[in-house]
Image 1 (tube, rainbow, N blue to C red):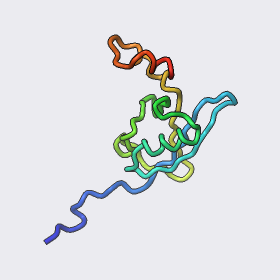
Image 2 (cartoon, one colour; image 1 turned 30 degrees about the vertical axis):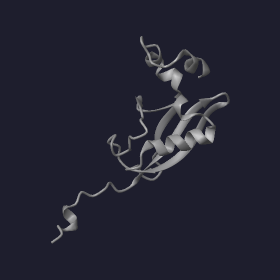
Image 3 (cartoon, rainbow, N blue to C red; image 1 turned 90 degrees about the vertical axis):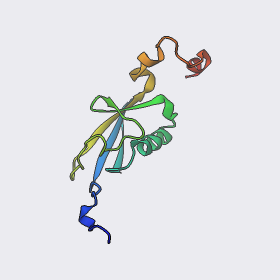
Length: 118
């Protein structure tokens, strides 16, 4: 016989309202997103990059000073669903501004032509 449904782990109920903020030439640019708790941030990143015509490899997304990875989810970061009128803020910025230390590492495998094109 099948175990009762109550024994199954329940997925988190609710969603997170996000505002992705980027500093532009004309001040802050804000794009709103609503995400399920189990949706990967990669979906939001792709949409944001398409909207701004920015290659995803050149954008970095930060929440609470932590870089978000495409396979992270609000649930995996321990976020709680937002209530009415609540939003979480994610900062979008050029990758070169946030992870310059990794591109300056000794013995990097990126060819110089790739770095010059960026």
